Length: 176
Image (cartoon, rainbow, N blue to C red; front, top):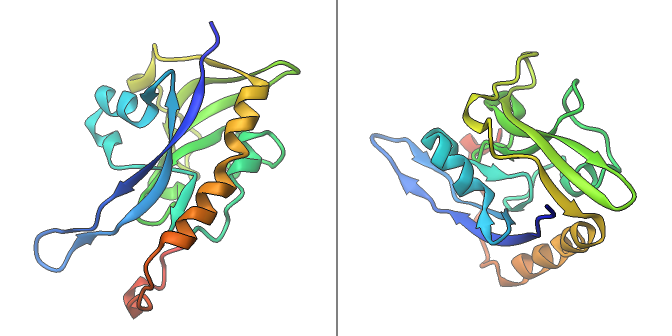
């Protein structure tokens, strides 16, 4: 069965936590499969997955922002095993914090995301336990590519609508 893919703008809001700690705001595009957020599907399996952002960041932007190229199979994976990250840490986007990844298969007429798992870029092991029965996702290749071609439009809208910001504090130098 072929699934439909769409993108939805999401915001992980700024939140002041205890003491001097906080959660940064992060705006990103969520993957919506057959009308349902993939992030929400993953969060239902393990609530720890709820605090993630897709690799399609809108703001702040990541230095290495070739996520669309990887999702289209045009750029190499940043992981040694070739798996493609879909969701990453919303604070820094670093694979060392952990990422939800999939095996990406592209043929002339379809794109498949299969074997979702949790992994880091410093361990060889992929943890599949929380995601055992929710894939594969099979997309029509033309529809998939058309959806991903809209990412630049979302970026343009985000830049146009973004309020002027003050420079980040010095302790945020590590943030991508």
